[in-house]
Length: 301
Image 1 (tube, rainbow, N blue to C red):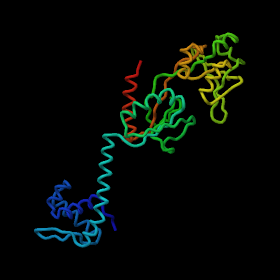
Image 2: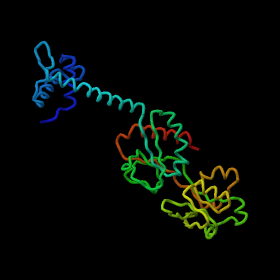
Image 3: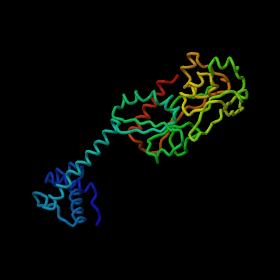
Image 4: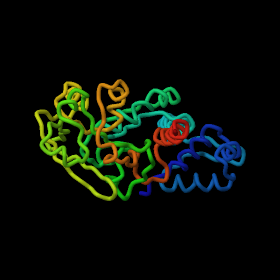
């Protein structure tokens, strides 16, 4: 048996409620003849007469009354769900999940959170800081944040923040004892504070100047995955530290840390927000994309 379509059940419910084909046809936005034909086909598919018709009146049969009692609450649920969906399109609501590496969260995303939620109080924003690359679709995220070299080709990507830069810094007292390096090679063997990644992976420091790239593996008494602990170690004079310049802003402004090798630390594109290529992204994500465009315009230097 061919299952009835939702529009046919809605048509039957309209006729049964109004007990009049003309009024039901107006409600459904179809002609009387089209509505009558649809009802005949529904009865044929179900193998049950649902309506008693005369030239002057129409009324549900016992089977029709039974179907209407069960059908009416379900159709109301459907109508309410569609209305809620339309309202969410106009007033974004629901959960928005974003996966991002820690530097992008702390330096770029965090300042956006309060202004975005103030504008969209019906959205629940969840930001998960995670360094390893993941499949955001498989893990249930609406969007992710990555730097340009890690973006997948099948994703839509939009700039999230301004250019970033790594900086090498040390405490003034440390520099007084060990001197200021003029080239990256002078860091070889110097006390350094290492940045560790999951699994204990130690990432080399990379420098670039005039097309020349130099990579140095830091060596020293301390390494950590936490930028706060690294900065404290640098303040305590344990060695040179290379990290995002944004993390050092307060310490540099106060003179507690001093940068070196600035001409070997060029800027690079900031992080990108990326999401699956869809014709209609979720309403909460669309709202964030609109907010992001305005945020970048209003905060541009």
